[in-house]
Amino acid sequence: MCLAVPGKVIERFETNGMMMGKMDFDGITKNICLAYIPDIQIGEYALVHVGFAIEKLDEKSALESLELFRNMGFLEEELGETVSS
Amino acid sequence: MKYLQEFRDPELARNILSEIRAATTRPWAIMEVCGGQTHSIIRHGIDQLLPENIELIHGPGCPVCVTPLDMIDKALAIAAETNVIFCSFGDMLRVPGSEKDLFRVKSEGGDVRTVYSPLDALKIARENPEKEVVFFGIGFETTAPANAMAVFQAKQQNITNFSMLVSHVLVPPAIAAIMDSPTNRVQGFLAAGHVCSVMGYAQYPPLVEKYRVPIVVTGFEPVDVLEGIRRVVVQLENGRAEIENGYKRVVNFDGNIPAQTMLAEVFKTTDSAWRGIGIIPNSGWRLNEKYRAFDAEAKFEVSGIKTVESPLCRSGEVLQGMIKPHECECFGKNCTPRKPLGATMVSSEGACAAYYNYGRLAQIAQRSV
Ligand code: SF4
Image 1 (spheres, each protein chain N blue to C red):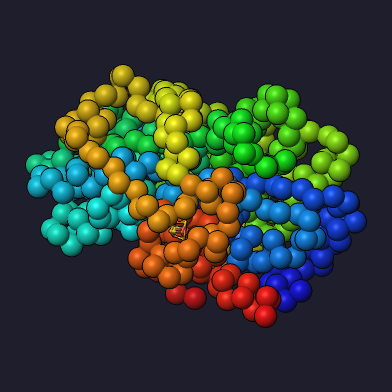
Image 2: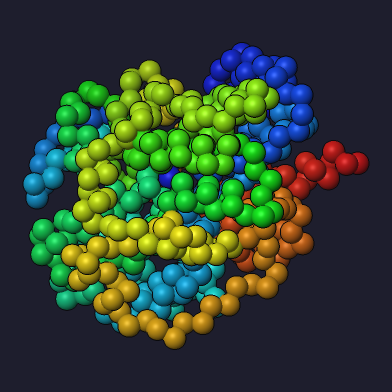
């Protein structure tokens, strides 16, 4: 549970003074806190852990690890939902 | 090499493996301190692809597994209180306390909820002002910034019915404790990549120098793990002990500064107990005085807890690399992920559960036939 899953920022907004974003993880979208990488832009990828983006990632590595996450069944575990394969 | 096809880049994996083979002239013991790496190693059979004289020791890298028993018991006591909504990451629910687990508390009527993020718990608190909402804030440095933010926001927004039971552990002091142990066999470390994405790796050069031990920042994907091992082996064979970053696409030296600033605002270091290992100095975080009002331990008087660890469980020895999971008599018999005796059998990142899930016992039995 210390793993971080790559996702793509598709929206940016503020809640209670916190920079937030809607992010897409292989079809699942979630609201994610962007306060720790506030300069991330729409279309960029970041590693996300328990609802927080912690580091930017280039698109190629992001897509590759997403695929691996899916195959290893980590995606469901990390995003706390059931992902249909 | 039936596993290799499953690698994202089998060719690259094969090359790294042959480099490891060519470099290895002597036996070496290498520890990974990341549950994700442990999972990846067992799932992809990396330990079985390596030359026989390279041993991987699965260290205390799973936060669910090392959360101390008295913290679990406190969580159980708080979760059982009538006015409480107890929120936790899902993998904590089956962790055995002295007498029961959170699932049991839930089935006995406790309001125990699984959340994805600590911010979800904060939302529940906002929506249920008449209840006390407690979040079980566990984890390594990767998770801590999220938990810190939830507490910070609770104070900012004056959400007084929110509190956190904090049990955070830190990787570098654990590495020091392992090296200080008189029974230590570890000669090189893979440092957890995602922990370093938050903290950077400035904390490692002093460890490398003091203990003359190679440390390589390593990702968790199979090829990353192989590359980390290769770098450690090359250092060991050449008598070098350095810090190397084998996970450059994610980790830089300084780490995430905004996250570290928030951590310093909300937490301070404390001696912490690690389940199965014992107290390690300065190896954990607790809430700063300023945030005491959000400390569940201060809010709820849960004293008089007497912890009883299963006398059968040998997870301490597993976590320190003294035995492999299948060498425990209970493994797969009276201890399984559905009915775990020890915490290392709970999370898929715990060594016992990883061995169990990927049928290690069966494979080992098969090979010895
Ligand atoms: S197999 Fe079960 S009882 Fe044995 S060490 Fe692992 S968790 Fe403990």
